[in-house]
Image 1 (cartoon, helix red, strand yellow):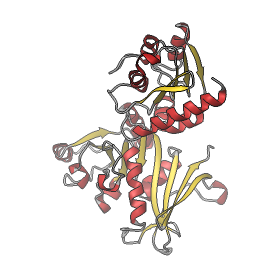
Image 2 (cartoon, rainbow, N blue to C red; image 1 turned 180 degrees about the horizontal axis):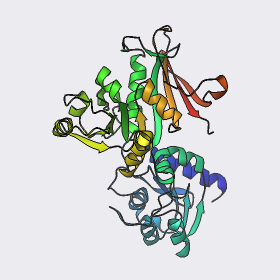
Image 3 (cartoon, rainbow, N blue to C red; image 1 turned 180 degrees about the vertical axis):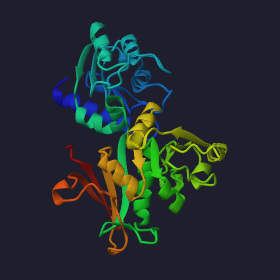
Length: 367
């Protein structure tokens, strides 16, 4: 196969992988295409954690035609035993003659060893085809295994003059129905959603995916709901505690009565360390439990703290054609910025109309 053919078939593997965007956590999104000659003889993708991996599904679809085929996989085939067997062994048993991977697996259990095992078995291996696209498909899985924390996506809604609420807290609804439906898509792909106790007390959010606002064909699982509540002010009657799925409250409080009441309401409590390291500790704890992508839906204080700690990878702002004036509340609390030169530089990577609103996606520039 030539380079253009490799790219074409790998593009198809990436398209297949994206079909399970909302369902594979804590595993990565992976697609596989088996090609014999110039014909696709089998396709597959990893659909849910604990179920067959992409390579196994593609081999099953190809049957005996997998022998002598080239496998295009959007991530290096695994070689470790988990809830399923090693994909390297499945590829060898099927008689595949060549494996093309978009990228090596950052999981230390594989991390190049999968391709090495295939090469040692006499299978030709190639890596790096459409690697950028493959990494973009799994930003959280890569981040968790390389930096020990989730990929953090900060979502905010604001007026055109960057105000999130009136001075009295009124904020429903700044953006329109189309933007709110788009947020459901962000929630569905996220492993967890984080908010602060201030937002919880002011708005009593559900922080769940509303299936009625998603496309009918989209499958999803409810993300973990996380509240950063240092003083344990969350009431046991909080709406999010009654939603499907799990809720986690991160706190430094030791009030036994409050803790017991929340646990009886279905919450899990996570004890934070010292105040200075609370945010990194929280992200590390979430990564340890398999959280790949974290969506933050919070107020200016928590949003600003994450930005100042350089713990935000992507900012999504839904901006409404509305002016609220300088008495209304601002987007971010950033007290460390005292001059124009100290301003946080961003790269705007996407701007799209969503109904009557605009969705702006930006990434903080590295220092």
